[in-house]
Image (cartoon, rainbow, N blue to C red):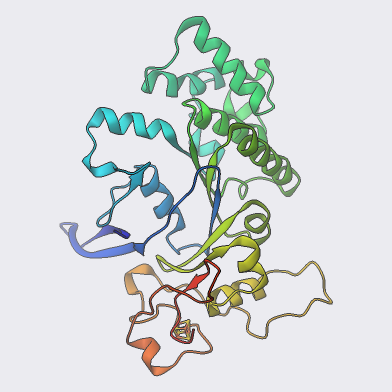
Length: 315
Ligand code: SF4
């Protein structure tokens, strides 16, 4: 079943629940072994909430999350813990995700304690192996997070996520808090690790160029829904949904002679609490028609022979 995530909204003097905000709506996606699935969209489109639901940090309000065919909701606490080893997350801000009062060695030891993994010399060897894997020296183990650069901190966060030998990494904007000069180094590291360890990635980002470079398939989200999904090359060469077209047209083009789509993206994403009825993109869509305000378009295959789907009444 498709996944949805709601959050309660509290108000009034007694801070009672006054409404529910649907941050992720009916999302149905599959991730194959060794695949990079890019999740693209502006801020406020539900990408991070979806990522957190995938690693079990947030309970879905509806729908089923399956890992290797197992419905996560039906597993025992022990089975669930084992499963969380397989699906790990790397967050946007490595400074916030590392405890400032713990040396790097202690931060890296945490997943070993949580999951009851190697101890003693075996743990030390594994921690050093993880450091080497992400391109850091053993000396960095004795440092505090504030003594490392942003890129080094993100390498530590990646090493920590790899401690449980996961099969899947959910990477939530892992480059956007880093300096431009460092971004490509961390990006190359992610590519190298994916190939070397046979990992699958869910790569959440608003950066079109990075998503295009890294992903095998891409799902575009708008106000909690997937509005288009396709193999990456296909999506970037011939986007079909008006939102994806506008998103691509709004990106700075490295080639000023390149033909630009006529309709760049205008306005802001409406708040999820006030998501428009019908097609939620209708308030910004230059092609909107009366029926777009009334009925939600289904995600449908738009071309025969290609797994390219979009949710728009015009397609
Ligand atoms: Fe635009 Fe209507 Fe298509 Fe939504 S369904 S993207 S409003 S044309």
